Length: 220
Ligand SMILES: [Zn+2]
Image (cartoon, rainbow, N blue to C red):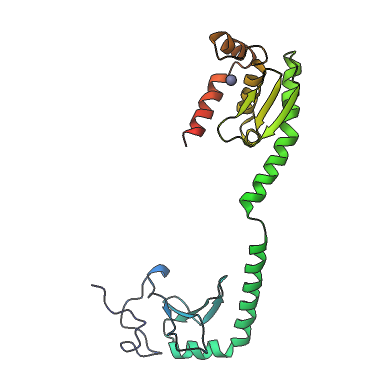
């Protein structure tokens, strides 16, 4: 069983060196002790004794919690007095933290913003690249659509309408080109026969690598 922690004031009187060895790692420092709820003058104060700290340090966390580092020879009483003197500063920091939390809550989440940017890029890049490749192979695409397809990377209709998944825009170029060429070759053959794959191989010699990459992605 673990011995009493040096923070216990009944054992180690304040302002005297603790008889126990201090924990060498900050994460082994005595656990955080929230104030009892009947202390309305010090809401959310957390005291942490730190064996290497030389003085009292107050930090206000992003959630508004106030954390006071107590030096090895310091006392909780002194820490509280220190916090009381710094109250105006603490409240200012808490107001700042609250404003920052509000600002973050209003902003679109990074994932959503990234997705929008990527879709915009897909709309811009994929049709261009498809038309470049179709010109190289002497094929005619009647229409290109960029879609949010869950299960497929692309499709090609008999009328020459090619649909592409916007996520192709974030793939390695060789893989993206393979998918585009695959759909373009369907303008010649609407099946997946050996003859179709010969067309793909002629236009995209590295297509097997690209297919393996796509399979590895869908297996994730
Ligand atoms: Zn196909």
